Structure formats: C-alpha cells, structure tokens
Length: 204
Image 1 (cartoon, helix red, strand yellow):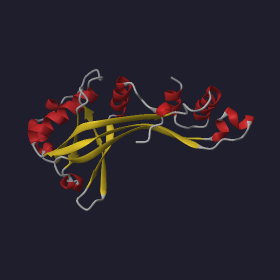
Image 2: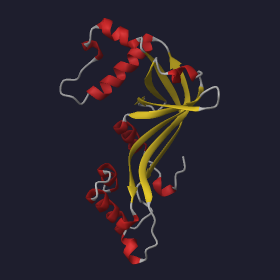
Image 3: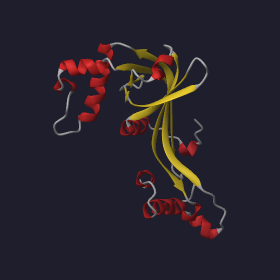
Image 4: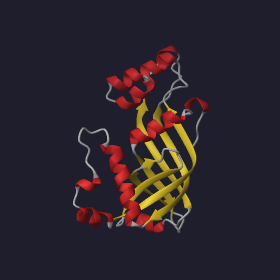
C-alpha cells in the first residue's frame, strides 16, 4: 500500500480499533492460473495480531483454489467519499485545486490455510458470534440453537486462517490540506449528503 507519511496510521491501538469497527475484509488470493480472487468475509483479528480467522461458504469455489501457505491479502476498508475542490477555502484564494477521494484502509498481508474441520469452524463461528453479540443486552450464543442445526450449518462452511506478516494502515483524510480546507471538506460532506463517517473521522 502506498502510504505518504501524513496519511500513516501509526498507533497500533488506532489500527486495531479501526479493524474491529469495520469487522470484515476482502480476502484476496491468487489461483493456480494466476487470477486474483476475492471474497468479502467477517473477520476476527487475534489479540496478539498474529492471525485473522474467517469462514467461507463451502459452495464458494474460492476456497478450493487456496493452497495451504499461499500468499493472502485481507483488505479492511472503511468509509470513503469523493472530495469536491469546491469545498476548499483555497478555491476562492487561487483556484489551484482538484478533486480527490478520502478513505481509510488497513491491509493485513501474510499466508493463509483452509480448515475443513467442523471443530475448528465451530470455534471460529463461536468466537466471531461472541465478538459481535457481546455489546447486546441479551447476547445470542451458538449454543442457543439446536446442536443438530448448528452441525448441519457447519458442514456448509470451511474455515480460513491468515497468519499475518505485515500490517499497513492508511487514513487519507485531507491531512495535507490547510486547516481551512479541511474545515471546508467537513462542512461540504455534511451539507451535501456525502459520507458522514468520513466527516466524523476528519473532525476528531
């Protein structure tokens, strides 16, 4: 990932909060014929940052093209928005402005293996469910469903485990613009129905 220094997310805690807030990633691998293949999946990043777990529908041919230990990229994409040059204070000053695109993203790169094992996938599904149900007043648990029903559903999925070798994180939020230009972008996003999430991220 190309990351100018002013766009780098350097704080590991910030990166983790971002990944957890998104909760999903495009899992990208390359098949035997050299063609990239991607599937959007819910993910869970381990506390030590070493692994990412996910599960995929058995009916999805993607997993059959994944050789154990093959390279993998997990793209965690946050809110994004078109930025009009009309929002910059600099437009009125000298007019030397152009459009851009603001976004935040984390790339987790490493190697991946498939787990075609109901015990492993049960643990993965349980961990993912617990993560997302935890904030609820009455969290749903995998054990709330009949065991035969869960067993049947587990047969319809396979697990994925990404061993993370590199973490790259970028927040492109007009940090290279003046404070007046940044304020104009935030106001423009809020007034013209752009992405409120991008405006919120810039307005922190």
